[in-house]
Amino acid sequence: MVFCAFALFPPMDATILNSQRRPFSIKLWPPSENTRKMLVERMTNNLSSPTIFTRKYRCLSKEDAATSAEQIEHAAFTVSSQHYEKEPDGDGSSAVQLYAKECSKLILELLKQMPRSEHEEISFSEVIPTVQETFFDISKGKRAFIEAEEAQELLKPLKESGNSFSKICFSNRSFGVNAARIAGPILASLKDQLKEVDLSDFVAGRNEAEALDVMNIFSEALEDSNLKFLNLSDNALGEKGVRAFGKLLQSQTNLEELFLMNDGISQEAARAVSELVPSTEKLKVLHFHNNMTGDEGAVAIAEIVKRSPLLEDFRCSSTRVGSEGGIALCEALGMCSHLKKLDLRDNMFGPEAGLVLSKALSKHENLTEVYLSYLNLEDEGAIAIANALKDAAPSLGVLEMAGNDITAEAAPAIASCIAAKQLLSKLSFAENELKDEGAIQIAKGLQGHNHLIEVDMTCTGIRRAGARVLAQTVLLKDEFKSLNVNGNFISEEGVDELKEIFKKSPEMLASLEDNDPEGEDEDEDEEESGDEGKDEDELESKLKILDVKKEESLDAPDSN
Image 1: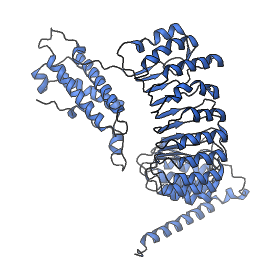
Image 2: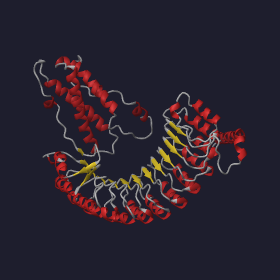
Image 3: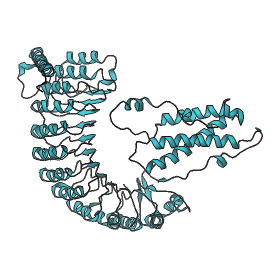
Image 4: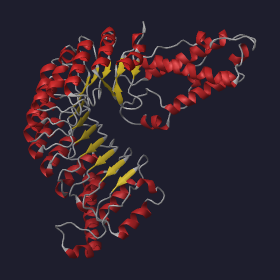
């Protein structure tokens, strides 16, 4: 007699069902919390209600059934998660199958070993095996110093013989030297099984000498470990701190994810990172957010990027990089053909680096998220990047280019690019000088786009006409959640019109508290506000002409 595993499972979440209609792969693992809770409820009902199996063995009380169901689900989920970690590049379908199989197996084992009499007792732990935890985390709770005595108690589970911890997180607790001396030997004893280590924000508030000593202790303890993930963020490392971790960094040959965010990475520190991380052939994620890297530091980071052919996720945002460093980084990015996520926000690249970046982007077919806000790209850089992305990155889902001094001159190229990205879910061109003409062209580029969720056009100089067309464009999209046109010059009548458009879904329209109905751009004549209706008519006429030309081009006979 075979117990049907998938009969236990509730229907998939609507988000997963919708995703299955998309032409790209989705992740089936892990299941949502809602799915897990529904599974526990269904197992509880199956164990406490008359079924072919409970009639043969025995029904459980509702309370015992609920307890058993929770234990079974937790055990199956843990086993399946461990299985998924071994093949993270898959879609998770094998983990889902194992999850179902484990649940079914444990239910049958439980029922078979249940005593026939209600007066007999059985230990559920005899039936449902205890699955050893793999993640040790002390980061929860209050941010505080940790000294030797507390470290001795806190790290006890890591000393237990036969433990299976492969991930540790010491973030949010500040280690002193004495606490580090307790932790060091423990970590050294585990380094053959550790795969992920998070030491972010673990020396906060310590003076420099003590912090460097702590870093050296941890570095020596973890030297020659075989890590896939290492997070050293939020530690004010500087060059001295980077070199304090030298033994750990130099010994890594299989690192896949490296995080050095908010670490005071100067140009000297960046050169030290490039020197001390010689093996990056398997690196997939590299994050350098919020450092004082500068152009020379960016050149050093570019060398790391060049040595990382499998890079999928690169972040070098808020790092004070100018045109020279930006060009070096962008040239290096052209050598990474697997890039999926790129974040270069808040640097001083300028148009010249934007042109180099456009050449790099044209080579990236796998990009799904691109964050290029506040790079001083101007129209020249924005047009080049839009043209490059139009013919690349077919699965692009997020595009952010806020604060780049982009005007309506670049809008046709941007609209053409957007029109080609039907999987786009989030779009931001906030804090640019697009005005109504640019906003309307971008809105036209968003026709279709059934997966669109969010559009941000705050502080773009738009008035009633641009806001109305944007609102009408996004209103009927099935998954849409937020249109933000705050900080513009929309008339009071225009605001009322927007509210009327969104009257059935007011939550889709973001706050307009910073809108200035009396405001106008410096380049506009004072009379212009009185000619708003005339301007709107002219814009609408332009749109109709564009639409007619588009239809004529579609109806024209094929020259072939």
